Length: 167
Image (cartoon, rainbow, N blue to C red; front, top):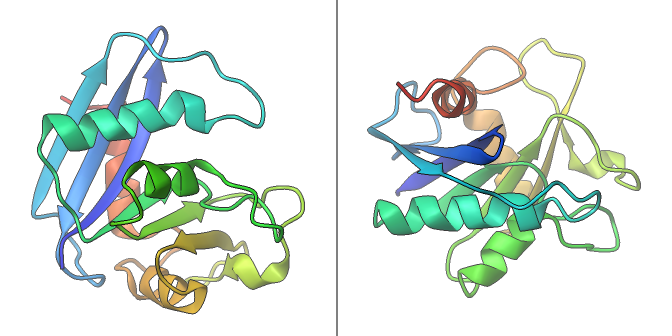
């Protein structure tokens, strides 16, 4: 299985999109890392974050000819119980529903209930996991299985560092 975890860091007026590729949910280290720099990005718009981040993620996939089996985004696939689309759902749709997307967010979006919360390690603060293209329970099991003893899995910390310090 080819899994791609992604994140984007904004460097006004541009951004750095990063990805770490791994082949097992328990992996402690990536098989490959990739970054893409964008000179300009959309301005932030409350409730429409995907307009800013989606082009960055699509550019990363295109520039590096990435064809993962699953993509993990730093954010939400769905914003609430009603199924309002977040970044991950827009990515899933942009890829014609061919690649499942798991969203891992550090904060709940207003209107989310406890079924999206995932506790890892000794943390009492949950991550919020949503998914498109695979069952929520399966996505949550994958996030729980990810390497790392703390709240945020090792490779999600790694992709966050990579987009902030691409080297």
